[in-house]
Length: 346
Image 1: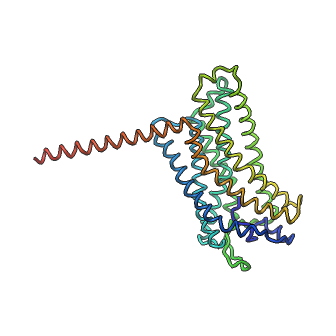
Image 2 (image 1 turned 45 degrees about the vertical axis):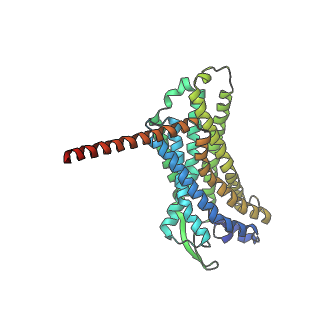
């Protein structure tokens, strides 16, 4: 996921465009104007929302369910992303002159790339959990253990770090005389290497997980609509949890599918399977627009937890109740101690 705007002609995509001598689209000026404010808004809202979600899951007296373990890790992945975005807001506002040095260029880019991989696989895990809970509860219910869920999350984080390693290795800060900027960009050894990693993103970050999500979602919907299976009426909690998961799945697909489709088309263009200046400019603009639509998903998830998640709202009330009770107990203890001290002095 390359959030450096293509108008600076410093990425692999732009090498192709320069070769074809395509004129720059006029929409870039408009995009450059709104990007910093939009990114900062996403960052602030995303940090507040996802920190709130994580605090509720961590401070609640009851242990998290399997689905909540996955959703809390999804919130952590979203928090990682929105914590990295302010650096890019400054970068864009600074005319794409990267002021933070080479190390942060690599680490911030790694954080954004890890979110692209980890978030979709946490969505895969939560969709598989709902699939097992509703479709195979009797035969595979034992698989839904918190210990297994935590191990799965650890594997996803490791997988995201592994697939993000090329970003860590090939990101660099370099002076571009033509633009008078020190740009943080992906400096692949060759176009072929860049194409290989973009194909990996499309396959492992989109095609495979979306196929799994689509299958699980279809099976879940079929199970929910199957009136003959009376146990679903009894398992009201499972149904409520599933409605939240379905909302998260739908929001994720709406926000991320356009970005991955444009990325796939861009790979085809750089491989010279498709071509054309109009298509090239449209893909560059679409890549930026859909990139930031994907980022919006990190803000949308906490909102969905509150609006759709009845169990989550219940957890919020109980958590605030716990904190209020602790505060009262602490205050009462302090007053009792103070009274005892005053009596001793008297």
